[in-house]
Structures are given as C-alpha cells and as structure tokens.
Length: 178
Image (cartoon, rainbow, N blue to C red; front, side):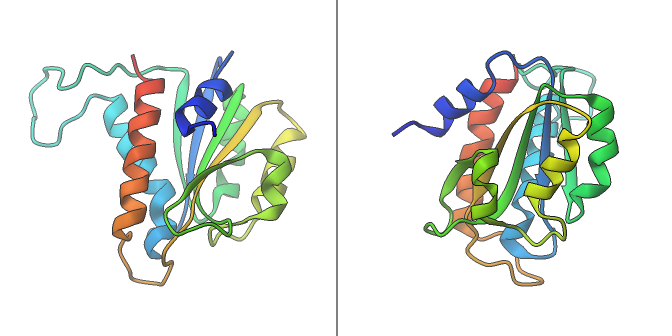
C-alpha cells in the first residue's frame, strides 16, 4: 500500500505552482478540518510563532512563493476566480469527506473518484467545481479527504480527526517547505 507521503510526492512531481484549497465550515466540528490545515500550513510557511514578536526567524522552513494557500470555507466556489488567476499546475484540496471508511481515516482521491464521495457540507460538488475550473485552466488534481467523526453544528474538531490532520500537516510541511 502506498503511503500518503509517497502519493503526495508523486502528485507533486513537475509542480510549478501549487494551490492548496482547504474546504469546510468552521462551525461544524470535523468539517472544519480543511481550514484548520490551511491555517497551520500558512503559519509554518511564514515561519511564524505567535509567542515571538521579534523579527528573527522562528523556523527553518522557508516560504515558497509558488504555493498559494486558500481557506475556501464552506463556499469554495467563491475562490474560482482567484484559482484561475493563479493558474496553478497543481490543485490540492483538503476536506472532510464521507468516503465510507473508518472515522479519521485519510485517503487521497483523484478526479475520477470524486463522484463516489460526499465531500463536506458545501453547496457545490467538488466534481462540478473541478469541471468548472478546467474550462479555463489545466492542472493536476488531488483531494486529501479525512473521514469525519461528527459534523454537528457547534462542535469542536474531534480528537482522532485532529490527530489525522496533524499527520497530514507534518507530511505536507516536509514536502512543501525548504
């Protein structure tokens, strides 16, 4: 079985510009996992440390200008103009996805598999979103889906889903930052 890291390494081959789009409603527990991961990666990419207000670099990780992080919230269709403008060679979406696996499982999903999953609580299907973008731009696509435990209104991200998200963050940060 190919690991998540190996799948992402393969996906990122020949990547000239990457858009990482996190999707989810921050008021609905595990559904907020996409925005959570985006915020963590943005903080890492900038080498930020909230407890250090000095101008010294707090991380050995370096921001790569060919990576764009977008918190798409529950309306990723609102960011299609930005994605088209950026014209990425690769689009990576991170979302809570009902994939029929065990809660907190992480799975990579290619474009042809999108109709088989129910991704998050957003109004536009990811399948339609990708088709809409492909009218104007060409890009390699991959979805990182995390099976939610609960997406009830007012809940926090569940412990096991948060643990899976942190593993995804570790893998992505090791691949994306110098």
